[in-house]
Amino acid sequence: MPALAIDTSTEICSVALGPGGEPPDEIAIDAGRTHLEVLLPAVEELLGRQGVTAAALELIVAGTGPGTFSGLRVGIATARALAQALEIPITGSSSLAALAAATAASTELTSLAATAESPAILPVIDARRGQVFAQIYRTNGGGIEPGSEIFCLSPDELIAQVSKTAGATVAVGNGVLAYHDLFAASPLRLPLPASGLHRISAAWHLPGEPVRLKYSPADLLAVKPVYVRAPDADKTVLLRKREPWL
Amino acid sequence: MILAIETSCDDTCAAVLDGDRLLSSVVSSQTRFHARYGGVVPEVASRHHLELINPVVAEALSRADARTRDLSRIAVTTSPGLIGALLVGVATAKSIAWASRAALVPVSHLEGHIAANYLPPEPVEPPFICLIASGGHTSIVHVRQRGAFELLGQTLDDAAGEALDKGGRLLGLDYPGGAELDVLAAGGDPAITRFPVGLDRPDSLDFSFSGVKTALYYFLRDLEPEQVQRHRADIAAAYQAAVVTALVRKVLAAARLWNCRQICLAGGVSANSELRRRLQAECGREALKLRVPPPELCTDNAAMIASAARFLPAIPFPEYLSLGARASGGRAA
Ligand SMILES: [Zn+2]
Figure 1 (cartoon, each protein chain N blue to C red):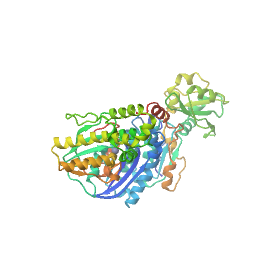
Figure 2: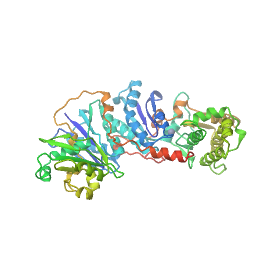
Figure 3: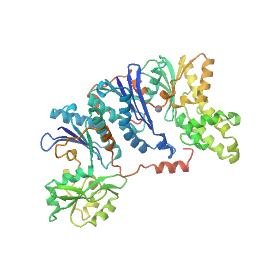
Figure 4: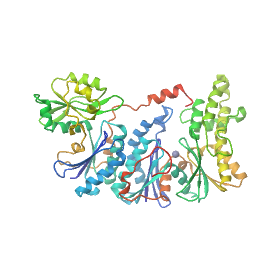
């Protein structure tokens, strides 16, 4: 069943079409803040080169972050509107889990973890304003499962928090790249900055097994961004209190 | 059949238009979410748009008894507005267009407000001078034909609706205070004081409302609290009169300058009773025709975006896929 996956939680705009070949076909663009402009052309190109029509799609999977708010909203609004217009099922998938799953499946993991048998994986996404989103994932037999809640901390706080965890932990993601010196000086193990493991790939949102979900319009709204942080309204309120004529 | 989407500020809107028959128009207002902040918080607005957009579109299609495959055009507001809010509407509109292979029409929010005048019950024929006044914009445009306009003047600072809301807040009214200010002012005597009318000179069709707002602030500061209490309605009336005087003088000057016999209103401030009363009177005196769309077409809505899309060029599939949104004004690209 042709399934389309979208991830716009970071500066990378990634779309993947599965099952198709192995690995699934994918386009990833360094979009910066231009997700709205590059996302649908990437989808059109991806379907075009696989000869898949929009009407043939059977499932949409949206990366739900956490990540940059506007980027996430473009990806999720797009995924939801496609599902709504095509009347096909949609499901959400954690962008941190996608990073962790790619790392768990990589041959790089064993060399990075050295002696550790089941290393933990720490996907880290840049949250801007000096913070990162991160979550510990445990590996077992190639699978992953969350080993903590989602953290929203400064990189220093995060490193202190996860250093308490016993055993080898491999950290990946654009949050690691944004604060590379801090992470490199920590006990965490890191792939090289150029490694593909730091970039989110939408292919890891695709279901591993053929799934057939029933279409329900209510499911559209269940797919929503994982914001973690509350909207920054406090500043506006404070400003108004001080200067009521503003 | 056209599906239109509008998410430029704090209302999530969708509408379906077939020829000149408005089949549905759904507006989900977020005002109650923003009231506790005393104004629209962009990140809060963007989050609500994402929560509301799919149900609002579904409701508009269902009330119109339409499905996405019936749509030949999708219209969407691409500028100006809050960028994070616009992104949600444009991403949604493009995706529905892509899925149904429909053409896409980018519409500027101003063009939309003007085109509210082309809808039933009384579709207006150009030429006319249009005053677009709301919480987000204040502009005077000259319309020679449908689908085109010339900007003659605009506010250099606050919008007229914003000035009325802020005046309401200074007088202790809840956000958005403009409508309540109107009610309060109705029982007041504006002769209590004279607030300045911004840019009140014959060579300019632009507006400025920051002076009147500051004047009100200092006027209230220098009064004893019990005097403020006793004269609240009078102060509200004087303040509203200054804002309305600016609007009325400029729009009449525009009609004279462009030798135009017809004036149209657009935007939420069209509902202001003092503005309507003064414009009625002035237009009667100068034998001008005044046209005001029904209130639900004056405030932000998607029917007006669909209406504008009938007279604007459509971008065929797949050229619009890379279309973006812009926060600043001007025409949609
Ligand atoms: Zn408006």
